[in-house]
Image (cartoon, rainbow, N blue to C red; front, top):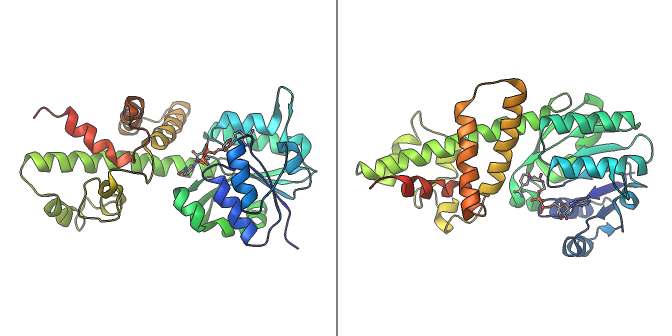
Length: 302
Ligand code: NAD
């Protein structure tokens, strides 16, 4: 028989992830304090509870998909009058923490799970809302091998690729390291296109060379920041995301926390975080992160 699932946080990601679990035959009991999110989930067949504690009380596996580390730790431990999920769940519940949070918060959450007699994995995702709807997310998982094995059938419903990255926190570590590569490489590609424009080089010519040469990367060949060479990239639809600049700024903030706590020198990773944060603070947070090319043009002198 399939494990009974509790699902906490039915937002842009959690809503469609839970809907895919229902469609695969799982009984999913969910909770979200925002009525619109709760109604959407109920319409997809999720049994909506009145509190998080009620949603997890009968569950064998609990999935959390919340905005930030603070939300996750508050939900697990309880907050003021709100009872925590860890106290409300039966013993030996498997927690799959899928939000993007810091490595430190992920390892804290993992320790709390073990202290309260449960098991847990950090299992952040990439692939965005499109991947959540299609069930093709990539899961990056940290925790014990036997817990990974137990979680795999559930994760495979929501994901197309599930990678066991190591012990507690390793999933979040993989997520922020990958996104640090992505954040820096998108800025590099955008700077090169703007320089090419000023040097009289067409977008297509630069694309044709770099996409088959040593400048090749995902930011160029899949999410190309200029319209034309890659018809499906957000640049062709006025930079509608895609992957919003605000989320990139958030993830690079988590990378900066990890750089601070490890003492690693990463000038470009840190600077990239500032650049997307400036874009977000000046009102561009809802645009695809490739819209950073417009900032580079605007900051150029001619
Ligand atoms: P979202 O804001 O749309 O959804 C979060 C939901 O959590 C909201 O509906 C909110 O009401 C709910 N919530 C808050 N506190 C709660 C609580 N105590 N109990 C139950 N529900 C609660 O965010 P999202 O886009 O779904 O993202 C969720 C996480 O996934 C974030 O950490 C984000 O960084 C990460 N992520 C998002 C994307 C993306 O493209 N949206 C991609 C990869 C990873």
